[in-house]
Image (cartoon, rainbow, N blue to C red; front, side, top):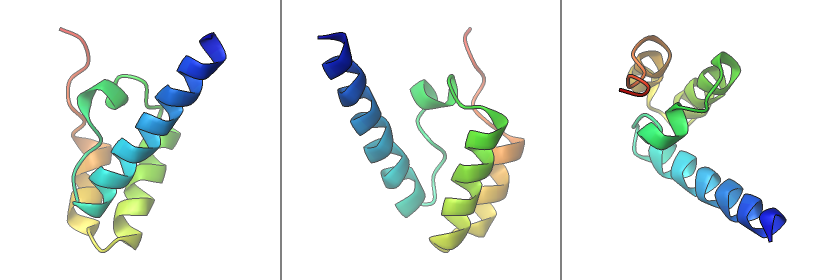
Length: 68
């Protein structure tokens, strides 16, 4: 059961990242809480490849604040 939940979470994360990249947006806040610097760099690269370089720079320098 835990394995299935993990698969669903990964599926949702991929869908959310694809949506953000295709729309030149930052990943949703729930994903940002788990993203490493490498994750931000990957997100930035994907955004640049999708033709949204300005938003890619923002993703690394201005992530949504964690927690609260």
